[in-house]
Length: 306
Ligand code: GLN
Image (cartoon, rainbow, N blue to C red; front, side):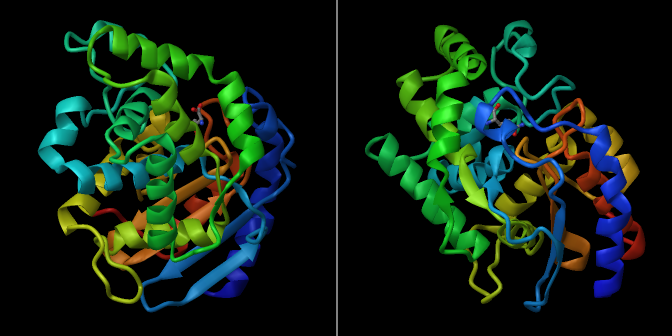
Protein backbone atom coordinates (compact mmCIF):
# COMPACT_ATOMS: atom_id res chain seq x y z
CA UNK A 1 0.00 0.00 0.00
CA UNK A 2 1.34 3.37 -0.99
CA UNK A 3 0.94 6.51 1.10
CA UNK A 4 -0.40 8.31 -1.99
CA UNK A 5 -3.23 5.82 -2.34
CA UNK A 6 -4.28 6.31 1.27
CA UNK A 7 -4.16 10.11 0.95
CA UNK A 8 -6.30 9.88 -2.20
CA UNK A 9 -8.78 7.52 -0.50
CA UNK A 10 -9.32 10.08 2.28
CA UNK A 11 -9.75 12.90 -0.23
CA UNK A 12 -12.07 10.89 -2.47
CA UNK A 13 -14.39 9.82 0.33
CA UNK A 14 -14.75 13.26 1.93
CA UNK A 15 -17.70 13.75 -0.41
CA UNK A 16 -19.66 11.11 1.50
CA UNK A 17 -19.54 13.09 4.76
CA UNK A 18 -22.51 15.21 3.69
CA UNK A 19 -24.66 12.03 3.57
CA UNK A 20 -24.20 11.38 7.30
CA UNK A 21 -24.85 13.01 10.66
CA UNK A 22 -23.03 12.83 14.00
CA UNK A 23 -24.72 10.84 16.76
CA UNK A 24 -26.93 13.24 18.70
CA UNK A 25 -28.55 10.95 21.27
CA UNK A 26 -25.39 11.27 23.38
CA UNK A 27 -25.00 15.08 23.68
CA UNK A 28 -21.18 15.04 23.92
CA UNK A 29 -20.95 13.12 20.63
CA UNK A 30 -23.15 15.75 18.97
CA UNK A 31 -20.35 18.30 19.57
CA UNK A 32 -17.82 16.44 17.40
CA UNK A 33 -16.89 18.04 14.03
CA UNK A 34 -18.46 15.80 11.41
CA UNK A 35 -15.74 16.65 8.89
CA UNK A 36 -13.00 14.64 10.56
CA UNK A 37 -11.78 11.76 8.45
CA UNK A 38 -8.74 9.56 9.01
CA UNK A 39 -7.40 6.07 8.44
CA UNK A 40 -4.56 3.90 9.78
CA UNK A 41 -3.33 0.51 8.62
CA UNK A 42 -1.16 -1.49 11.05
CA UNK A 43 0.90 -4.41 9.71
CA UNK A 44 2.30 -7.31 11.74
CA UNK A 45 5.89 -6.26 10.90
CA UNK A 46 5.31 -2.99 12.77
CA UNK A 47 4.69 -0.80 9.71
CA UNK A 48 2.02 1.84 10.29
CA UNK A 49 0.47 3.84 7.45
CA UNK A 50 -1.81 6.76 8.29
CA UNK A 51 -3.63 9.54 6.50
CA UNK A 52 -6.02 12.33 7.52
CA UNK A 53 -7.18 13.04 11.06
CA UNK A 54 -5.33 10.25 12.81
CA UNK A 55 -4.20 12.19 15.89
CA UNK A 56 -7.72 13.23 16.94
CA UNK A 57 -9.02 11.41 20.00
CA UNK A 58 -12.59 10.15 19.77
CA UNK A 59 -14.86 7.85 21.78
CA UNK A 60 -14.37 4.16 21.00
CA UNK A 61 -18.06 3.41 21.71
CA UNK A 62 -19.19 0.00 20.41
CA UNK A 63 -15.74 -1.03 19.18
CA UNK A 64 -14.97 -1.52 22.91
CA UNK A 65 -17.37 -4.49 22.80
CA UNK A 66 -14.72 -6.56 20.98
CA UNK A 67 -12.15 -5.86 23.69
CA UNK A 68 -14.55 -6.54 26.56
CA UNK A 69 -15.66 -9.81 24.95
CA UNK A 70 -12.01 -10.92 24.75
CA UNK A 71 -11.49 -10.06 28.45
CA UNK A 72 -14.76 -11.75 29.44
CA UNK A 73 -13.55 -14.90 27.63
CA UNK A 74 -10.23 -14.74 29.48
CA UNK A 75 -12.01 -14.22 32.80
CA UNK A 76 -14.68 -16.91 32.40
CA UNK A 77 -13.85 -19.23 29.49
CA UNK A 78 -15.87 -19.77 26.32
CA UNK A 79 -18.45 -22.15 27.74
CA UNK A 80 -19.45 -19.85 30.57
CA UNK A 81 -19.64 -16.68 28.45
CA UNK A 82 -21.93 -18.28 25.89
CA UNK A 83 -24.31 -19.47 28.58
CA UNK A 84 -25.23 -15.79 28.92
CA UNK A 85 -25.21 -14.50 25.33
CA UNK A 86 -25.77 -16.04 21.88
CA UNK A 87 -23.54 -15.78 18.80
CA UNK A 88 -26.18 -14.94 16.19
CA UNK A 89 -26.79 -11.72 14.26
CA UNK A 90 -29.88 -9.90 15.49
CA UNK A 91 -30.91 -8.15 12.28
CA UNK A 92 -32.14 -5.31 14.50
CA UNK A 93 -30.76 -1.92 15.52
CA UNK A 94 -27.88 -1.92 18.03
CA UNK A 95 -30.10 -0.75 20.91
CA UNK A 96 -33.21 -2.80 20.09
CA UNK A 97 -35.10 -4.61 22.86
CA UNK A 98 -37.31 -6.60 20.48
CA UNK A 99 -35.57 -9.99 20.49
CA UNK A 100 -34.92 -9.93 24.23
CA UNK A 101 -38.66 -10.26 24.59
CA UNK A 102 -39.41 -12.64 21.73
CA UNK A 103 -36.55 -15.12 22.24
CA UNK A 104 -37.77 -17.87 24.60
CA UNK A 105 -34.64 -17.71 26.81
CA UNK A 106 -34.52 -13.85 26.81
CA UNK A 107 -30.77 -13.91 26.22
CA UNK A 108 -29.18 -11.25 23.98
CA UNK A 109 -28.52 -12.42 20.42
CA UNK A 110 -24.82 -11.50 20.37
CA UNK A 111 -22.18 -9.61 22.39
CA UNK A 112 -22.06 -6.63 19.99
CA UNK A 113 -25.61 -5.32 20.25
CA UNK A 114 -26.05 -3.21 23.38
CA UNK A 115 -27.97 -5.85 25.36
CA UNK A 116 -25.23 -8.42 24.68
CA UNK A 117 -22.45 -5.97 25.50
CA UNK A 118 -24.11 -5.07 28.80
CA UNK A 119 -24.21 -8.81 29.49
CA UNK A 120 -20.50 -9.30 28.70
CA UNK A 121 -19.62 -6.23 30.80
CA UNK A 122 -21.41 -7.96 33.71
CA UNK A 123 -19.06 -10.93 33.31
CA UNK A 124 -15.85 -8.92 33.84
CA UNK A 125 -14.16 -9.88 37.09
CA UNK A 126 -13.23 -7.30 39.75
CA UNK A 127 -14.07 -6.30 43.30
CA UNK A 128 -16.23 -3.30 42.31
CA UNK A 129 -17.21 -1.36 39.16
CA UNK A 130 -14.09 0.85 39.41
CA UNK A 131 -11.81 -2.17 39.58
CA UNK A 132 -13.66 -3.85 36.71
CA UNK A 133 -13.37 -0.79 34.49
CA UNK A 134 -9.69 -0.38 35.35
CA UNK A 135 -9.10 -3.95 34.22
CA UNK A 136 -10.89 -3.19 30.93
CA UNK A 137 -8.80 -0.02 30.43
CA UNK A 138 -5.51 -1.82 31.22
CA UNK A 139 -6.41 -4.66 28.87
CA UNK A 140 -7.28 -2.19 26.11
CA UNK A 141 -3.98 -0.34 26.66
CA UNK A 142 -2.17 -3.66 26.41
CA UNK A 143 -3.71 -4.90 23.16
CA UNK A 144 -3.70 -1.47 21.46
CA UNK A 145 -0.06 -1.08 22.56
CA UNK A 146 -1.08 2.43 23.58
CA UNK A 147 -0.46 3.29 27.23
CA UNK A 148 -1.96 6.76 26.80
CA UNK A 149 -5.57 5.56 26.44
CA UNK A 150 -7.81 7.28 28.97
CA UNK A 151 -11.45 7.53 29.95
CA UNK A 152 -13.24 10.51 28.38
CA UNK A 153 -14.95 11.81 31.50
CA UNK A 154 -17.18 14.19 29.49
CA UNK A 155 -18.43 11.41 27.20
CA UNK A 156 -18.93 9.04 30.14
CA UNK A 157 -21.08 11.53 32.09
CA UNK A 158 -23.09 12.26 28.95
CA UNK A 159 -23.69 8.52 28.31
CA UNK A 160 -24.68 7.98 31.93
CA UNK A 161 -27.08 10.90 31.94
CA UNK A 162 -28.86 9.93 28.73
CA UNK A 163 -28.48 6.13 28.78
CA UNK A 164 -32.10 5.25 29.53
CA UNK A 165 -32.51 2.89 26.58
CA UNK A 166 -29.52 0.93 27.89
CA UNK A 167 -31.08 1.00 31.37
CA UNK A 168 -34.26 -0.38 29.80
CA UNK A 169 -32.33 -3.26 28.22
CA UNK A 170 -30.49 -4.06 31.44
CA UNK A 171 -33.55 -3.92 33.71
CA UNK A 172 -35.49 -6.06 31.27
CA UNK A 173 -32.75 -8.71 31.36
CA UNK A 174 -32.58 -8.49 35.15
CA UNK A 175 -36.35 -8.80 35.38
CA UNK A 176 -36.18 -11.97 33.30
CA UNK A 177 -33.50 -13.33 35.63
CA UNK A 178 -30.79 -13.51 32.96
CA UNK A 179 -28.65 -10.55 34.12
CA UNK A 180 -27.33 -10.73 37.65
CA UNK A 181 -25.88 -7.94 39.77
CA UNK A 182 -26.67 -4.26 40.28
CA UNK A 183 -27.83 -2.70 37.00
CA UNK A 184 -26.26 0.72 37.67
CA UNK A 185 -22.92 -0.91 38.58
CA UNK A 186 -22.92 -2.99 35.39
CA UNK A 187 -23.92 0.03 33.28
CA UNK A 188 -21.16 2.07 34.87
CA UNK A 189 -18.58 -0.35 33.44
CA UNK A 190 -20.42 -0.36 30.08
CA UNK A 191 -20.73 3.45 29.82
CA UNK A 192 -17.07 3.86 30.74
CA UNK A 193 -15.78 1.24 28.29
CA UNK A 194 -17.65 3.10 25.50
CA UNK A 195 -16.13 6.41 26.60
CA UNK A 196 -12.45 5.55 26.24
CA UNK A 197 -10.70 8.00 23.92
CA UNK A 198 -8.77 6.38 21.08
CA UNK A 199 -7.12 7.34 17.79
CA UNK A 200 -7.19 5.46 14.49
CA UNK A 201 -3.70 4.27 15.38
CA UNK A 202 -4.71 2.65 18.67
CA UNK A 203 -7.73 1.09 16.95
CA UNK A 204 -5.67 -0.25 14.03
CA UNK A 205 -3.43 -1.96 16.60
CA UNK A 206 -6.48 -3.55 18.24
CA UNK A 207 -7.64 -4.77 14.80
CA UNK A 208 -4.15 -6.13 14.13
CA UNK A 209 -4.13 -7.91 17.50
CA UNK A 210 -7.32 -9.80 16.59
CA UNK A 211 -6.15 -10.39 12.98
CA UNK A 212 -2.92 -11.79 14.39
CA UNK A 213 -4.76 -14.38 16.48
CA UNK A 214 -4.30 -12.61 19.82
CA UNK A 215 -0.57 -11.83 19.56
CA UNK A 216 1.04 -8.41 20.19
CA UNK A 217 3.54 -6.95 17.72
CA UNK A 218 6.25 -8.01 20.22
CA UNK A 219 5.26 -11.64 19.57
CA UNK A 220 3.71 -12.04 23.02
CA UNK A 221 0.50 -14.09 23.07
CA UNK A 222 -2.21 -12.46 25.22
CA UNK A 223 -5.30 -14.54 24.47
CA UNK A 224 -5.71 -18.05 23.01
CA UNK A 225 -6.08 -18.11 19.22
CA UNK A 226 -9.59 -19.55 19.66
CA UNK A 227 -10.73 -16.41 21.50
CA UNK A 228 -9.43 -14.18 18.69
CA UNK A 229 -11.29 -16.38 16.21
CA UNK A 230 -14.50 -15.97 18.20
CA UNK A 231 -14.12 -12.17 18.23
CA UNK A 232 -13.30 -12.07 14.49
CA UNK A 233 -16.23 -14.34 13.63
CA UNK A 234 -18.64 -12.18 15.57
CA UNK A 235 -17.21 -9.02 14.01
CA UNK A 236 -17.92 -10.54 10.58
CA UNK A 237 -21.48 -11.61 11.39
CA UNK A 238 -22.64 -8.95 13.87
CA UNK A 239 -20.13 -6.04 13.77
CA UNK A 240 -22.18 -3.59 11.71
CA UNK A 241 -25.55 -4.40 13.31
CA UNK A 242 -28.42 -4.60 10.81
CA UNK A 243 -25.97 -3.74 8.03
CA UNK A 244 -23.57 -6.63 8.79
CA UNK A 245 -24.50 -8.81 5.82
CA UNK A 246 -24.47 -5.96 3.36
CA UNK A 247 -21.15 -4.67 4.71
CA UNK A 248 -19.43 -8.03 4.38
CA UNK A 249 -20.80 -8.48 0.87
CA UNK A 250 -19.84 -4.97 -0.18
CA UNK A 251 -16.44 -4.57 1.52
CA UNK A 252 -15.32 -8.20 1.70
CA UNK A 253 -13.69 -7.95 5.14
CA UNK A 254 -15.20 -7.89 8.65
CA UNK A 255 -15.97 -4.54 10.28
CA UNK A 256 -16.90 -3.38 13.78
CA UNK A 257 -18.27 0.12 14.12
CA UNK A 258 -18.94 2.57 16.93
CA UNK A 259 -21.18 5.64 17.04
CA UNK A 260 -18.10 7.75 17.77
CA UNK A 261 -17.31 7.27 14.06
CA UNK A 262 -14.69 4.53 14.24
CA UNK A 263 -14.65 1.23 12.35
CA UNK A 264 -12.04 -1.51 12.74
CA UNK A 265 -11.32 -4.31 10.29
CA UNK A 266 -9.14 -7.20 11.38
CA UNK A 267 -7.81 -8.92 8.24
CA UNK A 268 -6.43 -12.30 9.33
CA UNK A 269 -5.49 -13.48 5.83
CA UNK A 270 -3.01 -10.58 5.44
CA UNK A 271 -2.14 -10.10 9.13
CA UNK A 272 -3.12 -6.46 9.16
CA UNK A 273 -5.56 -4.20 10.97
CA UNK A 274 -7.37 -1.20 9.49
CA UNK A 275 -9.12 1.55 11.43
CA UNK A 276 -11.03 4.56 10.14
CA UNK A 277 -12.55 7.56 11.89
CA UNK A 278 -15.34 9.62 10.38
CA UNK A 279 -18.07 10.79 12.79
CA UNK A 280 -20.76 11.37 10.13
CA UNK A 281 -22.96 8.27 10.48
CA UNK A 282 -25.56 6.55 8.34
CA UNK A 283 -28.94 5.39 9.64
CA UNK A 284 -27.51 2.25 11.19
CA UNK A 285 -24.96 4.28 13.15
CA UNK A 286 -21.97 3.39 10.94
CA UNK A 287 -19.46 5.91 9.53
CA UNK A 288 -20.48 6.74 5.93
CA UNK A 289 -17.13 8.04 4.69
CA UNK A 290 -15.32 5.43 6.82
CA UNK A 291 -17.13 2.65 4.96
CA UNK A 292 -16.10 4.31 1.69
CA UNK A 293 -12.43 4.28 2.71
CA UNK A 294 -12.67 0.65 3.85
CA UNK A 295 -14.10 -0.26 0.46
CA UNK A 296 -11.27 1.46 -1.42
CA UNK A 297 -8.58 -0.18 0.75
CA UNK A 298 -10.18 -3.59 0.44
CA UNK A 299 -10.23 -3.29 -3.36
CA UNK A 300 -6.71 -1.90 -3.65
CA UNK A 301 -5.13 -4.55 -1.40
CA UNK A 302 -7.36 -7.29 -2.80
CA UNK A 303 -8.50 -8.10 0.72
CA UNK A 304 -10.77 -11.04 1.29
CA UNK A 305 -12.07 -12.70 4.36
CA UNK A 306 -11.69 -16.16 2.88
N1 GLN B 1 -22.45 3.84 23.99
C1 GLN B 1 -23.29 3.65 22.86
C2 GLN B 1 -24.66 3.16 23.34
O1 GLN B 1 -24.71 2.46 24.30
C3 GLN B 1 -22.67 2.64 21.94
C4 GLN B 1 -23.49 2.37 20.69
C5 GLN B 1 -22.67 2.18 19.44
O2 GLN B 1 -21.51 2.59 19.33
N2 GLN B 1 -23.29 1.63 18.44
O3 GLN B 1 -25.66 3.49 22.77
